Image (cartoon, rainbow, N blue to C red; front, side, top):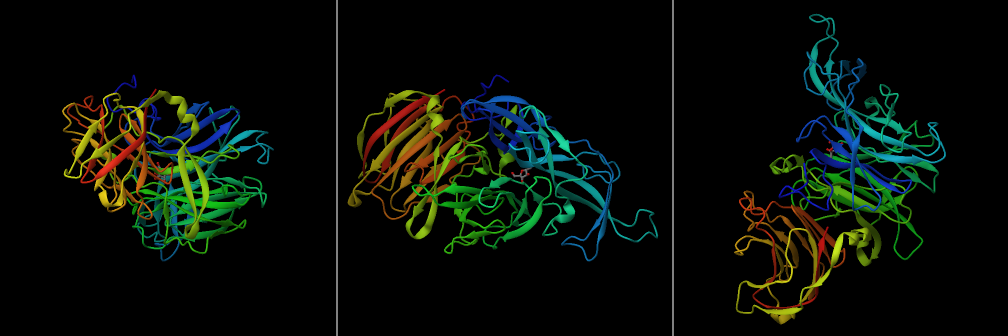
Length: 546
Ligand code: FRU
């Protein structure tokens, strides 16, 4: 691939070819940022899960590397008994592992699911100083049997089940290749799954707890986050669980993280628990929640005014998922996510690649009156390196008092990969019903995407119902606090994605889009617009991105 396809994002990471999903094992090591990720080396759909790999010296220009951890063809016989949440009595997990749900012709494979990488500076684990250690979930299926041997010497066949367990691998060549450690004896075997949900026990994210001098590993089992700790990186002890409350859909939880952060302007450390939920996000389907609290070495203790029922959301677009932060970036919390949603991921028909990452974002934890603490998010400052220079777009007023929709074209700026930003203000008695940008406009103006604000309902939104796509959407929206008389909108536009930062990172909406499918190259114009009111536009700038 030449990376020149019509919908190929140019400054967001995608693999040259094939499927990718979650970022894994983000870490800075020896001056280089490493991004591993869920990857199918053999196809453009989910499968053969392996850890792909890319590196960067500046967080914005990435170079694809060889697969770092391939799916495993470890076909060693599995043989253990356990009683899960669905069993009246223990059942026998016995046979060769498979990933094809076939009990008679198992293929002897284990997938490498999401996880994390840490730097073992002091050789705690015994693989050598400054070794990179990966923790990942090994996933396979295996036959389960009961203890009735009257018809079958193996016992009565009950079916085939998914098994997930936590494994460890280490790299002595700076992340190029990993050696699986004791693969048939996972560091946390499935028999230790706290909820008994053997098929949903995954996504270990290891972090060092300075205060308690131990390593902490949150991971999910079913619909809870379990916390394990270790002092030697190999033996892990179960400490506590955080349970969901049933108000955010029925999907499983995934990719949890405990992030120690300094509260901005203070010396106080708080812990952010972030997690991805497969269902129930504000824009529908999957999305990311977070909670602020403390960590006492065993338990996460949410702020008194927060509960697991009252999540804050990291992003209000449809496409920010499985986000995790980089290790070894002292003083900075940098997160990036997979720019998609399990709800409709199959509808994205790009080829020969499928899936891309969001821009890396810097997270800051700020004190915020009654809400306690909130995360602010801005693209990392390195993103400015992509800018080809700043163009002033001309401050202006739009008087649309008598009009449902008035467009003010930006003649000096167009394209499909840029940043655009402006400050919009209005008087309460001339409040428009909508205002903002029309992006990705066709030459004749009939097709476009709106990135806008509706002051009457106080909603920032991304509206794709007018961009010509087969499945028009207007799900991405977020309510602003109070009744503001101004809003700053900054959008990062790429070939098939838009990331909107509201008021310098107060709220974020991330959205993929495949505009004007019949003429995907005719999507370059850009305008301001307002309806039924008056708006003043100032500090309007654009920069083309390389
Ligand atoms: C999240 C997820 C993880 C899992 C991985 C598999 O998107 O479902 O829970 O480890 O993707 O590819």
